[in-house]
Amino acid sequence: MTRSSQPVTAFSPHRLRLAARTLRAGGVIAYPTEAVFGLGCDPLNRDAVMRLLHIKQRPVAKGLILIASEFAQLRPYVQTPDAALQRRLEADWPGPVTWLLAARAETPRWLRGTHDSIAVRVTAHRGAAALCDAFGGALVSTSANLRARPPARSALQVRRRCPGVDLILNGPTDGRRRPSEIRDARNGELIRPG
Image (tube, rainbow, N blue to C red; front, side):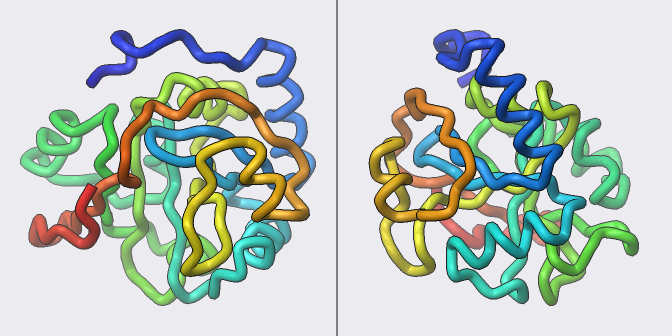
């Protein structure tokens, strides 16, 4: 499904500006995505990422997903894909497929964990894409839940399950039952079914 066939984002311009300011100030926010609510922060703010990981009780070694409204927002974090892979990405995005791409050498360890790759997605969720645009780049996006617990599917569940979040953007998910599929770009291997 393309972004254009989805409902217009439920986030008001005021809420988007507030969320972008919160992110730039090092805050951790929650927002709806394709299937669940996500926790997000500025990927280049180490303190914000560490706070997010603490809220989620997730070890830094596992790495994180970045979402963007367009591939250009991901370029600072990933090596340039070859033509065949670029065509595959363009076929899948925007959409609920997360790809493990080779990380640039300068991509912070707090984003990629112990890996030489990083998980990235051009989101099809209009609200999450608008959030990336308001912020001006890619965002950390990980499910709003404690490690190994069910992800939040509403703002109320975020409040109950993820104390310490600075701002929640309330709105609908796209109604998908499962989080995004994850594939390894090196060999196309399915890491997590969608």
